[in-house]
Amino acid sequence: MVRVSRARTAVVVVAAALTAGLLVSCGADSPGEGVTSAPHAKDAACERMADRYPDRLGGQELTFTDRPGFAVWGDNAIVL
Image (tube, rainbow, N blue to C red; front, side):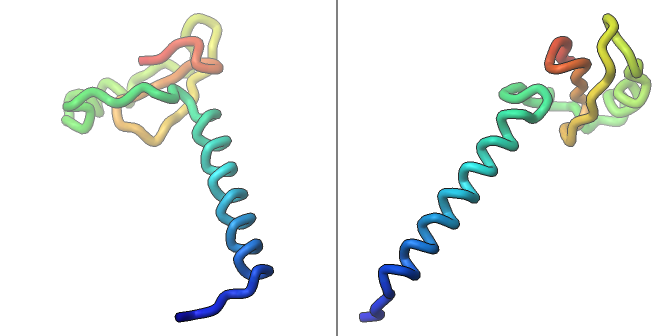
């Protein structure tokens, strides 16, 4: 049986809690949170169309995401 000091256990618990909080807070602010890409978003036709998304739409600026075929303008005002 390995003995771990209380101080070390406390450091690990605090580090895990801070990491989890950081991940949750980053995810909550990501554009289009909770919306997924279409099943064929990586297809060539979809990628060609996505390359032509306008920089502004409805007075909102385009926000790039890491999801294929997915676009957000403004603060989630318009999601495609």
